[in-house]
Every structure is written in structure tokens, then in C-alpha cells.
Image 1: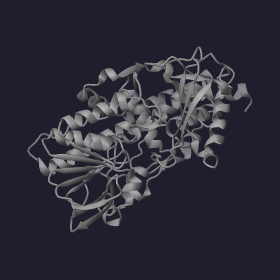
Image 2 (image 1 turned 60 degrees about the vertical axis):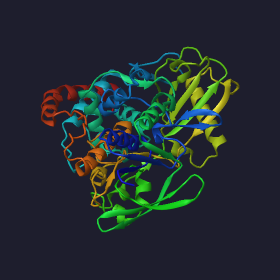
Image 3 (image 1 turned 180 degrees about the horizontal axis):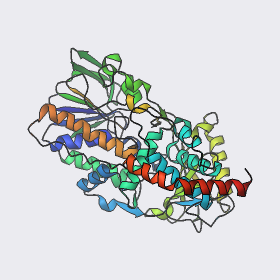
Length: 470
């Protein structure tokens, strides 16, 4: 095929296809699954549309929110201004902060300290950073680490401090309300996105899995695709190819492909971790739950939840969509056993919840569909969009990005970057693809503030040590 073939119909591939079609190029999009969206999409499980998990759109998701505007679906998102925290035995009292005031002050000083770091190629784990700071208390460290696990599935020794710094800087530079979909992403985001792709002339083929490729010289020569009926077809690559695949599937294409990446074979060093989801459909509405996110503080499995029965339209009962940050701890259990552990844990926070209340359960541990989690030093392995193969470009949330850019924003940004790589090859006369920058905080400015506040941090730390007898 002449034009561009995008392999992978997740958010990265969809964005690349949308942008390339906007350049006037013929585009086809191949996806192995029955539907589009990848981890940002939904699946029908036992007759119900189930998201991969709970999704949010922070204000610093600048490229993602611009895409939403281009698609004309801004009203499909609603603003959520609060993040609630619930301690065991305190329901229905929700807090905005759970650590004592002194520990919070030291945490904020730690944020300034982290922003003052210049990591570059040098990196360390979030664990190492936190545990090397003389001023941080055990309570502050525990709260930070638990909060991060709840959102990323990664324990602090496996988290990049540079990445954490980047996400904090992004929130600081682009403040504003977090947005949430008004319902499942298939209806409110991915479905409308697919409709726009097809209306604009993108050929979308689901149930089409890339199983092998061949390389000749500096070009990808053939693609072997298995259809939904199990039959395989090998065809010439023709024009350009965007490989918008998870890093594991990209690695499986072999050394001729991974060796052409920049850096060569770096993708094989990347890791992913499962982020579980538990959806509970109740027979009644639990009173006094908010319609925004709730973190269960100290939860052994790092649970957060959203009552979509309140947050989404069309529900008269409670529907709890829970994210399971430490789902790996349940890997050896059967589904029935894992659900029992999680429901018993939820009941310690929501005393009104009983087994009799539960009408339906959907448990998705996602062991086979893990979430890319940038670890310490992983930035040097993340591939750039351009490759040593003249007609191959890369997209995906694992691709090179500014520190801290992850999730949907990373996927969308990589799709735009891959489209720009194709534009330079096929439409050099056209304007560059627009990619919104993510703001940063000057380490020098943060260092000055850190120095100025050091006496206050020392005084607060000394006071906590005397008060708590350690």
C-alpha cells in the first residue's frame, strides 16, 4: 500500500492516523483486538462495557486535551476539583490530607528539593531520593510512596525520581481542574474518535494482527498480518509504516527491527506492571459517597475508587470502579479468592458494604496487559519516533518523552511525534505537526528557594523528633 500503514489502534496509533490523514495522506489503521483504544478503550465483558480502569485528564495533558477539542467532544468530559482520602474507621468523613501538618510541611520542602535536582542522564529511584533526605519523616515517606503505588502500580524502588520530578513540575506549570469522562471511554472518547477517523477517510481494520515483518536494506519490506479468521497474508509494506505497539510486542518483531531503533535494542530493557481494576455493581446506592476519586489510605493493595453510579449518567445505584495498585500481590490467587480479599478490604473502609449488596463483579487484573512504568534510568532506553529504517516510525506510551509525561498524554504525544517523523519524509513542504510543550520548573530557581527554606525545614524536623521521641 502506498501512503501510511499504522499498526496498533491504541491511543498512540489513533492519534498518528488522525494527524497523518490531516496531512492529506492515505492512511490505514490495523488493530489486533476487536476494537480500538488499547488501554484507553473499553471491552464488553459479560454484556457490560468495562473500562480498563479509571481515567483522568489533568490540565497538563495539553496534547490530549487539544485532541479532544479537535474531535469536538469537550463536553464529554466534566471537571473534578477534589481528591478525597479515607482512613479506616472514619467513613463518612473524607480528608484532603492525612499526614500531620509538620509532615506535610516537610513533604512540600521535599517537593522543592526534588525540583532543584538536575538529573539529565543521571537518575535514581524515588525510594532512594526519599530515604536520603534528612528532613523527611517516616510518615511523610510512607504517604508519598503509598500514593504513588495507587496511581502507577510501581513501588518506589522501581520508580524514576526524574519522572516523579517531571510530573510534579507539569502539575505546577499547568494548574487547573482534572477532567473525567462522563461515562465509559468507548462511548465518550474512543467511539467518537473512531467515527471521526473513518469519516475522514482512514481505513480501520480491527482483528488484524501483525505477526511478522521482513527487512531489506534500510527499509521494512513486508508485513505478515493474521486476520480475525486466522488466515495470514504477507504483503509489501509499500509506503511508510508507524509501529504503534506496546514495547513487548515491538520487541517480538525481532532484532532487525529493534536494532534499527534509536537507541538500538533499548526497547528490550523497558518494563511494564499490571494495574488492576475491580468493578462492583451494587443493588442499592451507598449513601454519603462523593462523585469524585477516593483514595483508601493505608490500603494493603493500594486501592482507589470512584462511584461511577454518582459520577456517570444513567445509574440509580452505586457502581464502584476500583483501581488495584498492588494487584501483583494477588497473582497466585484464583479470581474468586482475589475478589474476596479486595471486597473484605473495601468493607473495612465502607462499613455499609456487604456481600448481599453486590449484584455483579468484574475483576480485571491485567496481568496480560500491563501498564508501562518508567523505572530509574529508563529514559535512555525509550525509543525515538525516527528509526534507522527509512520507512518505519515508532509510537506508543513507552517512546521518548519529557520526564514525567506518561499515560494518555505520553501516548498522544508519541502519535504526534511519529506523524511529524512521517511528515518530514513525505510532506517536507507542509508545516510541522503541532506538539504542545509541557512546562518545567527551573532547577536553579528551586535551589534558591530550597536554600532559603532550609532553616525552617530543620526547625520543623527537630520539633517532630522531640515531640515523637525519636
